[in-house]
Length: 161
Image (cartoon, rainbow, N blue to C red; front, top):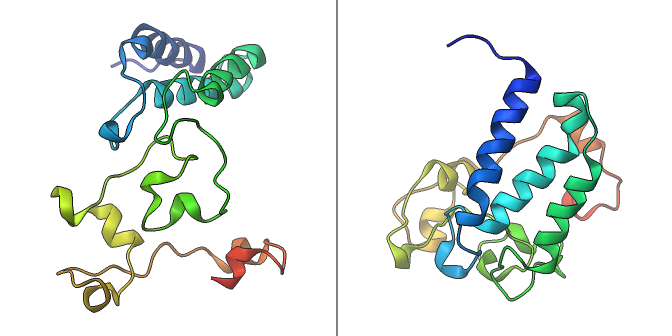
């Protein structure tokens, strides 16, 4: 295919999202791992947040409009309302299905036949085979370069994990 300009790619993505976002179901526990209105609204908000870079025109108001749709619950939620989790690590722990902060999750559950996957391997710990009584292990999660890790303040909870 021919190369398209940033503006053309932006316009294409925007139109695809606008044409389809209202056809999506609201986010609910039954949609974990699938696209929902909340996901579509979030993508549109981020698209408009960066619009000036990609299209040359700032689109702040549209970004706010779609962020407000997510925050107000128009796109659904897992727990009744999208909100910040009280625990900063809540959205990232092993039992995060009830985190009010999550908008899109990779499903992983031994109870629902969502077994080993690339996400579980890269995010899992090498000792999880015995600890969780499963037949797989991981590579001890994602690793950041020291300069990125050291950029956090000394009292940051992520440095204590």
